[in-house]
Length: 167
Image 1: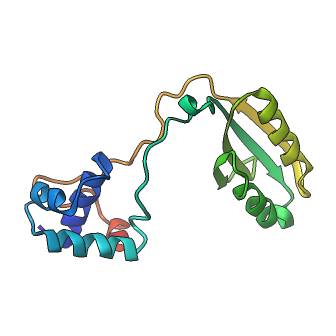
Image 2 (image 1 turned 30 degrees about the vertical axis):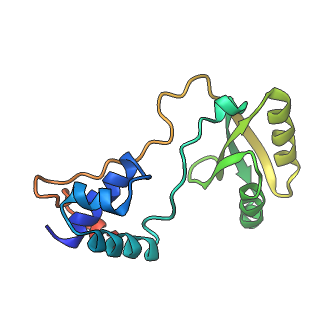
């Protein structure tokens, strides 16, 4: 198994349980604790592993309303719009996108009044020409990780063209 194969297996183990100790990871992967530590530090330095955080059920904390808003923006205003939206506390995702709209944001709110206030605030930003908001009725999948595929030897599968440079 290459380091790349070990890195994929390490990432998968952390996706399953990010609270595992280095020793637990080493036992699971069949390598030394120092190898796990070194591989994890390398993944962090390269920005592959960006941190360790709990998975929060925001609905249980009162943020059960999820809204998806697509935004049309004037081209020259796009960078400042994205920067302003990224700073908003209720917006969990801010994407620049292709197609009819320029930006897609996902937000979590306690109620319709809070959501409405955020939409009106967005509309007041210079350069925003329009929005289209949908309220999420049901979430079939959230906070999902991409399953990193490996062969029986722990090596990543697929053509690997992009994976070679990223892992």
